[in-house]
Amino acid sequence: MKSANELFELINKCPSPYHTVSSVKSELLASGYTELFENEAWTLFVGGKYFVVRGGTSIIAFKYNPDANGFMAVASHSDSPSFKLKVTPETVGAYSRLEVEKYGGMIYYSWFDRPLSLAGRVVLRTDDGIETRIVNIDRDLAVIPSVAIHMNRSINDGYKFNPAQDLLPLVGSSESRGDVMRSVADSLGVSVDSIAAHDLYLYNREHGRVFGVNNEFILSPRLDNLECVYASLKAFLSAGDSDSVQVFCAFDNEEVGSETKQGAASTFFYDTLSRIAGDKLLPMLKESFMVSADNAHAKHPNHPELADADNAPLLNGGIVIKWNANQRYTTDGVSAAVFQTLCERCGAKTQTFYTRADMLSGSTLGSISNTKVSVCSVDIGLAQLAMHSASEVAGAYDVCEMVKALTELYNTSLTVNGDKILF
Image (tube, rainbow, N blue to C red; front, side, top):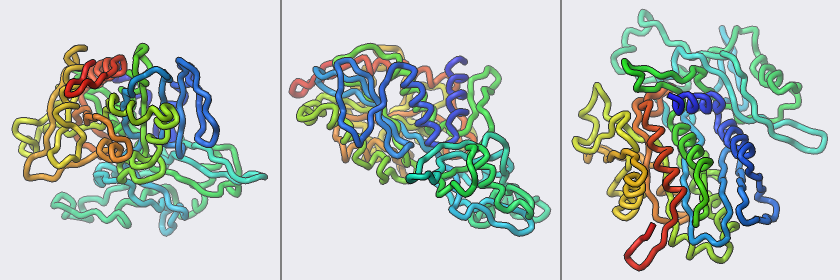
């Protein structure tokens, strides 16, 4: 259960993508990494360990090896479905409610009747411009209350929620106008007037827990995709030296399409690899490998008919290799064989995911990133239930399998020899 508890510890530190990147930065700095900045020249030293941040919510770390023949990269994402606070944060009637809009494709009903709070980024006025700070109101601040069944008899008959009406969180009495931003200011130790703007998100304050008759499952907010962030970072930091440049990535905005300056569809990945490799970039990409790590749908215990009959992952069944003929995932025969072989070498369990043939498949950052940086790539994840719920379910043991496999990957380098890949 050590890995589960470490995962919960990370999730508790990461109520927003800003906090996720801040937590990853802290881990990297503690491990001897140096921060680089995109607006400065880079001087890289042999054996140096570096990272760079874009937008405060995406981060790329790497171990520099000028003699490397390629890159071994793992990419996950830092965001989860949520609700973003509007510029005018409160609407006041009989009560004070938060004005929010939905971010990503969450399951609406799962957000009701849970302790919620706000976290993210605040922009402050200074004497010579502005500065950004991250903030977490670390207490139970709000709740989205259900309507009692006595007042809505159709609530269990497929009621359609209206996010503009049903999903506004209760935050105070009618006399509390302005207190939300005062709470934000108090958390930062600044005045309300110094706040110029904000990027604040609701988050579920419930902590992760282990459950099941044999403690075989975990329940936690934001498993999609902090579980993969945790596994890939742990593998990255524990890997030994390699003949490849080892790269860790966590991109923002996967839940809304990735087409932002810090998303997987941006230039961030390409820009960083270009500065590492210089004019060697193109030949290095031909001997590189990338893992796109984002959780996968497990067979549902109450609705097994929703899964593919023969390719439905199970909780605690190991790492999921995701396939889609329409290229929603990057996996192909070559990349699957490479990754499967690495898993066999280290004894990591794997399983396969296909969407049912009569259902549309989801997608993730791998195919999007590959349009900017084209490398041999595989899409993987860990099986979970209730994806995009305010609390999600996964297997307690699967994360260890992913750490094992990704460590093996980071310790490996590829050589392409005609139709052969040697590793």
